[in-house]
Amino acid sequence: MGYPRMLEVRQRFDAPRVDDVAGTVAAELARIGVRGRIQPGATVAIGVGSRGITNLALVVRTLVGVLKEVGARPFVVPAMGSHGGATVEGQRAILAGYGITEDGIGAPIRASMETVDLGATDGVPIHFDRTAFEADHVAIVNRVKPHTNFAGEIESGLLKMTTIGLGKHTGAALYHRAIVDHGFDHVVRSAGQAILARGRIAFGLALVENGYDETALVEAVPAAAFPERDQALLVLAKRWLPRLPVHRPDLLIVDEMGKNVSGSGMDTNVVGRKPHGRLEDDPQVKRLFVRELTPETRGNAYGIGLADFATSRLIRAIDYRTTAVNSLTAANPEAAQLPIHFDTDREVIDAALASAGLAPPERARVVRIRNTLHLDRLLVSEACRAELAARGNVEIVEPAHELAFDEAGNLPPLRFAAQP
Image (cartoon, rainbow, N blue to C red; front, side):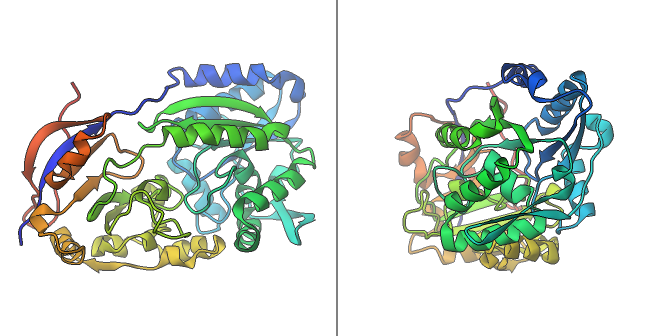
């Protein structure tokens, strides 16, 4: 079987970058008057989630330092719903994987799966992390970005972490069931406002990233402004979101997936295939092949159901209980469905290209990426050359080469030419 020749491509993204993240965090906290919001001696629970957010440990460590300067007693609580297998140990391990340890941030980590019932909205009980609720104040740290399953004026951000993240397993499961009936935007706004009305939430730190997986914006947000700023910052996050340079690839090869990359393992804003349907997707990927799980995802393969094909080594690396818990909590069992898998990359690619349409394999439209966070350097087959030429932000940096396999029948690691 023949294979397409691959071009090494560089995409350039127009987006700002925060060079002094710690200084910007401190300046933003001063801007909203954190000294007037937090009294000396007060306890402050800092909600930190399960996503692989750039500079997360630095942001949390700086926040801890500022709170200590005003005389507060900060500590971290995992704000990640059911992730980590819905266990205290699993959630602590996720934080540790991102450098969020007691020694690393200079504050205790108090993890619990217990919640308090704060009443109900739309008939849905409102659950909130008990440890955080018992603190004098709560601060939220999260990235604002397009959600991988839902579309609305508010998607992933401060309100989502306030509700679903700090709802722990019990609350996250209830909210996702309500989302099936009422929609994401409505449930997160409604539940979020009910929690904010209790007065425990003091402020949040909203982070937005650019197309290079760098911190592009840091903004301190008073609790009352969560809905407004989530909505406004989402507009920027969508503008800066990296995209594939090919609209309709026959085959998309994703080298790795995991919760540290995206909540759905692979960002559906990049690969398409949102649960709402594929006809409107951009891109429209005919066949999707994922090769590995990231070490940081700790076996959680939530989103593996997006793929048509995988390697058997990925399937063997799955912690299926953790994956199932995440999928069922999110009311999205399809996310845990296993694709066709073979032992070697060559076997998978042969099967994928044979099922992708009438184009000969040598002329197939193939894209290979490291993961959905890193799209500035990638491989694209020669059949896409005209589409690449029509894009002003794309540069071909290396001549075409054969799609090659090692002696075991697997693709070699992605290695790109040095930056000019």
